[in-house]
Image (cartoon, rainbow, N blue to C red; front, top):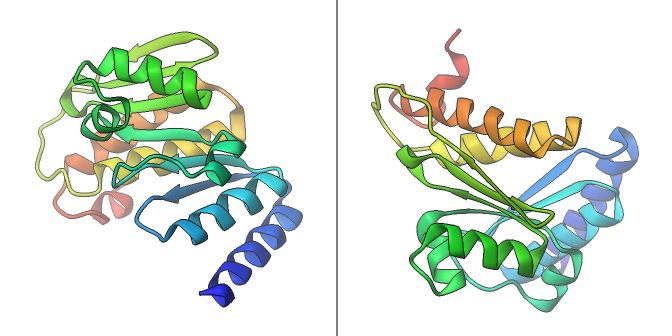
Length: 178
């Protein structure tokens, strides 16, 4: 596992040097030492650092010190904040971590950054399959935010990607559709 941690650090440092920034979206399904290594290395490389707290578990001290932007769904937000009210959860998590995006499925997205709540509706589409919708949202949000710095625009781009993802069967087929 130490070899994996070293490889993560080396790879993100190289990527940061060769691309001058970018985004690193890390998923909580990895062991904490790998998540800590990725978040720390991406931060050191000047990348926009995002953490998808899935499954929901509190950030370690090493993760929290970097203040990654949290990307969570409504259930994960409730578990982390201890409240079933999505707006309260978004505010609490945003104040604690600096910024948060809470996806609400068909109800849209909440964002909390710089002390302000942003609410965006979902796009109306015929839902075929929800597998991959959160990943489509997260990846598109991260890339747009890193390239533009526009938090609201990144949410809108993520919503569009999520809508496109749910309109097809399978987690990746939407990527190949014109």
